[in-house]
Image (cartoon, rainbow, N blue to C red; front, side):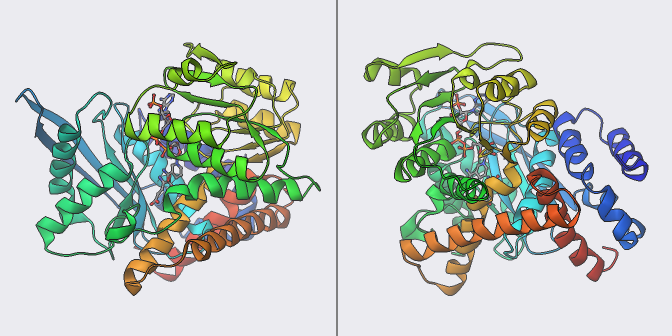
Length: 452
Ligand code: NDP
Ligand code: 2IT
């Protein structure tokens, strides 16, 4: 790594102690930028690396609510407004007990690059709470969401900051958050994305991240004269991203064989078909059950509980392609070796930063098709951008129109990433390409806007 970049990373590490995921994301991204800074001394003079690692603003607030037993509960709400150089802050909200400021800073930092790659006018942000929706009643989730929005509403808006969903925040939570925003502000606007169709949402937004990841896989495989049809695919997670990844894989004639949650994973060698997928959607989105039940419901399926440590047996299942779609750092070096040992062709990240740095290095050295999340999962936020456009127009676009735009945006992300990698002598390296292309677009805007 270039010594200037190394120094900057060390300064950032010293200034942000106890934030390992944030530092991991910064190190990965900036580690690719040495040659860019040599070609563009103005980025160095403008201290762009330092500026981009410092959130423009962080909001932290108390979220008090009353549970069903009448007891007062307190959670912490956070919104990281990372960068608004190319548009209003945009990015999801995560409700999960592991949420801390450092975790949201990593997600917000990646979001800035990702949103730039969509070419839509969206800056980057991320927020959430350490609230755990698991095991909570619907009324408890609603009261929590109303209190969360009461703390957040004054800091967001359709032209300022537009949150959406992420882990633990789906259409139910977006509904409660939107209702409270509208009630407090007396304004019906596109302040959140991922809304229901009848109240300002976009068709294809629920599907967008998963569909987009498969479209990105199509683009990558095409560079090697290959396609997804007939490929055995591993998918982790069983939430929004995993479900619609499986749906598109089925549409395109691939064979998805796994799903998971934090308790364990299922392996269905016959393949998850449409009927089984509909059952999973009902299990996860309506009954809010565990993936273990899939193995009880369908014959020939094995279930393995999650194991502690550096190894997830899901990644030992032989397959052609892997779509990690659960959470950060879910593919360790050991898991990457299992995948490579089984001659995986492509790893396509539906989740944000699901591969550890050691795993990333192994994939890059092996020369497989490896798509980092900031490129491969950009379809979700891209259709959020299209939802914002529809809200502004007071219009709904047809399903086919949104899907075509999503496909064309994923094609363009692939093209920008490939071109940037080639320009800097790193052809085929999608990590370098995504970081360079995303960085340059934001850097140019920041320079144009002055020292702000
Ligand atoms: P959901 O909450 O719908 O689903 C998350 C899934 O991942 C669940 O199956 C959950 O299992 C599992 N999971 C979550 N945390 C862990 C953990 N610590 N260990 C093991 N499994 C875990 O979230 P999404 O599908 O929306 O998000 C999945 C990933 O995709 C995240 O990395 C998110 O940041 C990323 N992403 C999401 C986008 C979106 O539009 N929703 C867009 C781009 C990226 P359990 O129920 O047991 O917790
Ligand atoms: O990580 C992500 O890109 C998301 N959770 C979606 C963000 C959005 O604003 O749609």
